[in-house]
Amino acid sequence: MSSSRLLAGLLAGLLSVGAVASGPDSVRSSALADNGLKKEDFPRWQKVASDAYIFEGVHSPDPSGALFTTVSLVVITQEGVLVVDGQGNVAESQQLIDRIKKVTSQPVKYVVVGSDHGDHTGGNAAFTSAYPDAVFVSTAFSKDALARSKNAAVPSKLVKDRETIKLGGTEIQVLNLGRAHTGGDLVVYLPASKVLFMSEVYLRGLFPAMRSAYPSEWLATIDKALAMDVSLYIPGHGFTDEGPAMKRDLVEFKKATQSVIAESKRLHAAGLKCESAKNCPAIEQANWGPYKKWPASGSQGPVAVAKVYQELEGKLP
Image 1 (cartoon, rainbow, N blue to C red):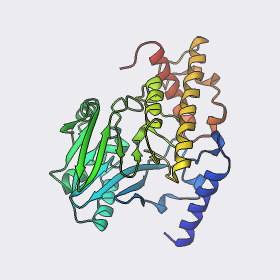
Image 2 (cartoon, one colour):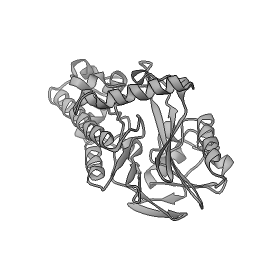
Image 3 (spheres, rainbow, N blue to C red):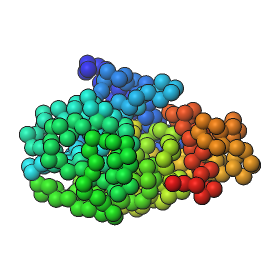
C-alpha cells in the first residue's frame, strides 16, 4: 500500500471520528469505502499496548456490497502468544500467523474464541496446522457450536465466568460478561494496559447484527463492560482509534441496539408478522431513524426484528 493511500485512509477516519461530539452521526463507520479504504489496503496491523496488537482482515461483503473489517487481538510475550479470534478462512488466518511470525519467534499457545461465528473461526485450521499444541479456549456454548459446525479446532479449555492466563509476565483475563451477539461471547481484558477486546459484543459503526443474539441480555453485557476500568475498548468489527472515541462509540452502539429492540417491540405490539428473517413483512413498517444509515441495516434489519420477536415470545434457543 502506498504511503499516500494510507495517509488518506487515516485522515478520513480521523475526520469521521472528530466530526461531531456525540450521536449516531458521529460514529466512525465500519465500511471501508466510508473511510477512503479498499480491500487491497488490508490486512493491517496496529499496536494497541506494549505487548498487544490488533490484526484487521476484511469480512466478506454485506449484501449491499459494503466491506468492513474483522478484528483479531494478538498478545505477544516472551513465553508465547495468545490470539483472540481468528479470521474467516484459512488463507486469512494464515496471513495473521505470518504477521505474528514477523514480530516474534514465540509460538501461539492459546486461541480464545470470543465469537464462535464463522467469520472469526473459519480459518482455525491454520492455527492447528502451524501450532498443534495450541490450546483453544471458549465457553461451553461456543464449544458445542463449533463441534456441530465441524470446525477444525474444538476448544478444550472452557470458561464459565473468568479465567486468568499468565503468559510471560502478562496477565490476561478471559471474561464471560454475559450473552450478547452469539450466546457464547467472551471478552479479553489486559489489566496492565486496561485494554478490553470485546469481539462481537461491540460492532463499531455497524448495524446491530442479531442472527444468534440475545437482544436484551446484550444490553446488560455492554453495561458490564462499560463499568470496567478500561482505557481502550476494541470491537470485533470496525476500526480502532483513541480510547475516548472508542468508549463514546460503544455507548452509541448500545443506544443503537436499544433503539432496534424498541422498534421491533413496537412492530410486535402492532401485530405485524415476522416469522423469520426471510419472512418478515413487519420490516416494511420499521423505522430505524438515524441508524438506517449504518452499514448492513438493510440486511440485518429483518434479522433483528425476527430475533426480538423470538425473545418476546419466549422462543430463543
